[in-house]
Structure formats: structure tokens, C-alpha cells
Image 1 (cartoon, rainbow, N blue to C red):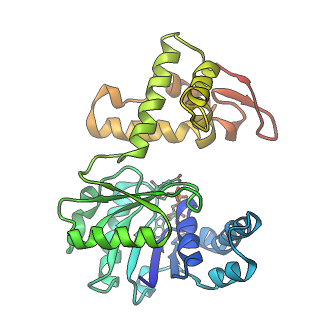
Image 2: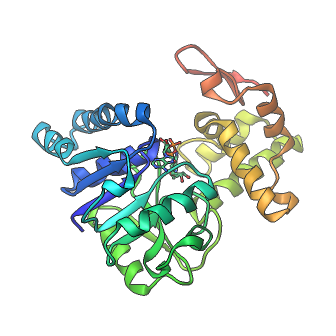
Length: 292
Ligand SMILES: NC(=O)c1ccc[n+]([C@@H]2O[C@H](COP(=O)([O-])OP(=O)(O)OC[C@H]3O[C@@H](n4cnc5c(N)ncnc54)[C@H](O)[C@@H]3O)[C@@H](O)[C@H]2O)c1
């Protein structure tokens, strides 16, 4: 793999592009939105700058990586791509459209992947002519520091494509986790969600309060952060929307957002970004007392 295309220069697309560029790959980043595309290079530079500050790359390595990044607006501008990674908005229809548009722009032997956090590849590949080269390569946020990358094959994905994706992930010094059979949300996020659901059940049942549950997770289970602290950090609305989408798909009441999370979203108390969620936050985003 030498030439990588990343589609979508949002939070994840830029980080994936930076990771690949730091590993010596040439990366083209395609972004439809003019404002987002214009800020993409400075955002990439800031991510690389922090990497240098942490002593993980030298300044010359950082500038060389930045030079390997190219930004385009339209998918028909791409040529000579070995691997395309779709990292656009988490909306199945948008992803299907982007993948169908992308396919004819790629050489026949290029690998095609989605970075979706929840949609299984067969549900995204519906409009592709060649589904054997398509799978999910799911990076975690923040991309430079999280070493795990999940690889999810659809029933139609060829073993060769899984092998190439695995080699690619290893070449980035990441640890591939192969998901052997499709399941929405895959492995890590499913486990994370199960822990969150249980934490909310314990809270709603009156068995323990927010702080005690977080404390148990930190100091009995060794988690770096409790589930309520984490929900506040990532945004309570994000978890709510993910569960709502899952519920709409399955109709299983166990997949529906909890009444506590629904109430917080309706009140607009979404975690750190709004100054209150399960905890209060001061203007410097420092955690204060529990809010529930
Ligand atoms: N944010 C996370 O923590 C995280 C973690 C792992 C995986 N993911 C997955 O990564 C993907 C992207 O997430 P994100 O958080 O970066 O989203 P984001 O909303 O920050 O970025 C998506 C970008 O895609 C662009 N886009 C939409 N349609 C496009 C098109 N047709 N062509 C080019 N660009 C287009 C949007 O303008 C936007 O800039 C999603 O599938 C998400 O599930 C996100």
C-alpha cells in the first residue's frame, strides 16, 4: 500500500490521514464541505504538532508527513489509489452513496473500507459491483494513541481482502482485532455499551450513585474512567443517538435509550460540552460535583 484515499475530513478522517502520512504513505483526503476542507490542513498540523511535543515524532518527520497530505473536493479527481477508507458522516444512506460514487474511481485491485462505528459492511455494500474487496476498518478515537483497530468482513468479503487489511493495520503499528461474523457495533463498543447500560440500570434502580459507580469501575476494575465520566466526555447525545438508531433497527426495547439519558438530552445537559451532564463542570471543563 502506497497511496491511501480517506473520504471525509471530519474528526476521524483527518486523524486517519495523519496516521497514514506519519507511516510514510501518501494520503489524499476528500472533503465535500469547503469550510471543513479548508481547516483540514491546520487541524492535521495541530495533531502532528502534539505528536512531536510528546516526543513521538521529530520535526522533520512531522513536516514530511504534512507534505504527504493532499486535499481534494471531488472523488472523480482521484487516481492510482491502493486503499480507500470512507470516514463520512455516520448515516447509512450517505455512506452507501459515497461508496457507490467511489467504486468507479478506484483501480480494480484497490481495497475499499468503511470506518463506520456501527454499521456492518454488508449493510453498506448494497450498491457496490464488487463486494469482495469491501470491509470495515474501524479505528478508535484518538487514532494516533488507540492501538486497537477492528476489521469486520461481510460474508462476501474475500479472505484476500481481510488479509490485506490486516497487513495494512499491522504496518501502522496497530493491533488488528478480526471480527469473524458481522454484528452491529462490533466488539469494543458493544462491551463499552454493555457496561454503560449496566451502570445506568444500577443508577436507575437506586443501587448506587453516579460517583460510586464510577469509583467502582476505576478502582475495582482498573478502568481509566468511569462510565458516567466517559459519557460526559464523549457527549450524552452521541450515545443517545447511537442507541436510538439501534432501537429503530432492531425494535428490541433493550436497545432503546434509557429514561435517564433521554431526560438529559431533552434538557440539553449533554456532558462536558454543555457544562453539565452526570456531573457539573467549571468553565475550564474541570469536573465538579455529581449533577444527578
Ligand atoms: N468520532 C468518533 O469518535 C469515531 C470513532 C470511530 C469511528 N467513527 C466513525 O468515523 C466516521 C466519521 O466520523 P466523524 O466523527 O469523523 O464524523 P464528522 O461528522 O466529524 O466528519 C464527517 C465528514 O464527512 C464529510 N462528508 C460527508 N459526506 C461527504 C462526501 N460525500 N464526500 C466527502 N466528505 C463528506 C462531512 O462534511 C464531514 O466533514 C463515522 O462513520 C463514525 O461512525 C467515529
